[in-house]
Length: 142
Image (tube, rainbow, N blue to C red; front, side, top):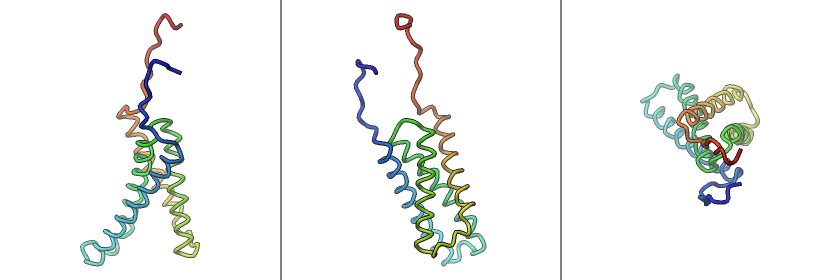
């Protein structure tokens, strides 16, 4: 552990970050679903295109779940990806059981969209280089 470096104090716990990301994704899912329902009721979007809208909503919400979680946790990107996707999927499955009487008809495509959205955000965050930097070790420490 480095002693000469001050901690920034901006990272939160893993559980808190995952919970925050899941809550943000659930809120985004609810808001975008309400917007989609409004557009369908006003006949701006045809009812036949409902499936495409729901798929886009789930993909974006899965990406937000990872992004919000990783912004809070700031370490262990792969673990945050797996846990945020799993937490969001479990929460959607629980809401499906609560509101639809346990009819899990489309849970596999839902899982694939959530994992795909979180995975896309995972890969894009790795490409940006927002992770930890590995510095070369000095000769006097070898």
